[in-house]
Length: 322
Image (cartoon, rainbow, N blue to C red):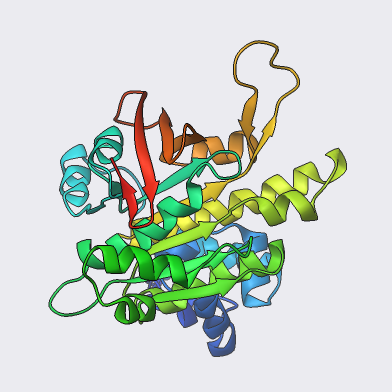
């Protein structure tokens, strides 16, 4: 009589170290790169995971496969998503008209992109949000802090002081709550965003500003031959920011450069850099342009829940106003 065999129970992993091919050292490297949970491993690309953990691609594929078994992947009902969206908070731009245009202010769990020509007000909106986020998102005497990644040498603490004083805030305290990093090139910018995951919870970061998102990519990957690699890196970059927005319920504000499209013979030829990758990734997309004197025009180009429209706002010494 043949022996009855019993199938051995397979224990699903709970920690990164439990995954095949991942030891303590590899797990630590992955955590530093922002892969802190089984969900993130399950959703990772093999080559990206291998690069972050400094181990083989085949081993990364096995780890991803096992992580996918361990997590609950699939659908969730719309009411669950609705409850999660109740956690969304908004940061005022300083202008009620501007806030109304985008549904009440710059949202957490979303990427808000402003593109436009030089002096259109993109950076000024960023400065205003850096101050206003500290008012809107601080809680229980714990100040909300801001991460400002500067790729164009545009950050000016003097401007922050002006806006803070106009609102009756202590400018030195406001400055202390803004962490600034200067991105030297596109690779350095990628690293700064990847490493941001290490400080978001530790420093109570509630807003990440990247000014500008595309300038280094535009300079480092010039010509059609480099376009594919540029777009791949930009795609990874923007999705990392979205992951932070979703995971930590924070707001992401990015500025974008523009170019004149020679193929447009009639109308405004201004076209944002980044192509379809950035167009699809941004939750709210705004086109800013300069008007007379201090006035600026904001046009909502794309949004999942707000109609297209325009509004006028002013850039003053004290910040953004109607």
